[in-house]
Image 1 (tube, helix red, strand yellow):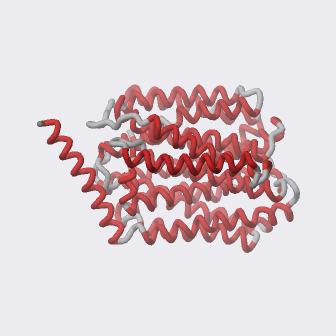
Image 2: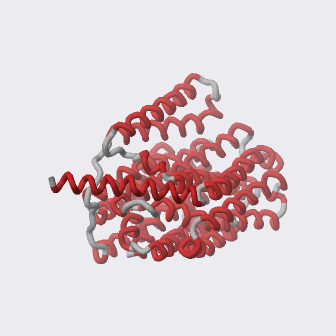
Length: 472
């Protein structure tokens, strides 16, 4: 069952890493700007982030296996449509179809894992294996993508999802039993629409600000929509009995910390991959395959450290992996920002290794902290919040880093210009590492664990009251 769940993560993660290598080829063939390339990534991550919590609660209600199967079919069909896209607009639209399917995979798979591996140490190790799949996708994605782009063309990067999706579909039908939550949560359409409005308007404002002007009426309107959506969402969800986002989750300091750390870590990852893809191919002039091979040190260290992090979380808790992750990711950002690591291959690879170690260490404690201490009936929703935080982070990372590049100069303007324009972006990545280090220290101590126990007691009391009311 763990292997089947990991297959779903593989196709979603592989899709992102393979696509990054194909960006310059897509940009050339489709005549797209930097913002156009940002939308091919963010259209997917935004829809995914917007629908993850809905998919988690729907799976708890209708059946996790059923929703998982639908997700595999929609994702595979969306991938096939992306390979046939006649232009940038169609590609962005089909990426959104992909995301609808992808939203039904990861939170549902994590809910299956959480309800299968009930012993905390065993669950942490299972989540470590799950996180290791991200490393495998990062290692294999750039090389596979480079081979496909160089030999067949960028459209072929979407084909790889179809056979993997078909295999996962067959294995799920054969081996995964159906399961549901004892008390599934109600659908929250108003909350869902507010989340979509918040994420969509915020990302649009960030991506389009360099072209439209940060003080333009259009950008200010979208910023206003984002602020109104956020305020309305918080007020509405506080009053709802079964909200889309249960704000009581955030009474737990470890859960809140894991959520913000996920945003920071994946913002750093999204910006890191976007920056390096453009640099290696547009500035250094490497082929797609060579660019993929250059990034293997980072991907390899992620794949090596992710399962080790899971074991460390299982035996020692999340504190050490989080502190190490923040240190290594921050050091990588500083190496590029202050010492211009791109100027020499040795420093470039050192930066990649540091980032790979940090990112490999951060995944397992994020996921484990998000679902630990929560009732298993809430596992799907809690895991969906953590997954949503990842996608929001990646969307913001690509949007902000892309906006920094587009606001200064084109990535193809030469090595000197790229280094000058990219320096603020690298400081942002270094800042994300520092935030992970600080939050890891603040949200893993005795006080934080006490808030987690208090939060769990709230849900347990609600469960007992519900049973008493049902008996009455």
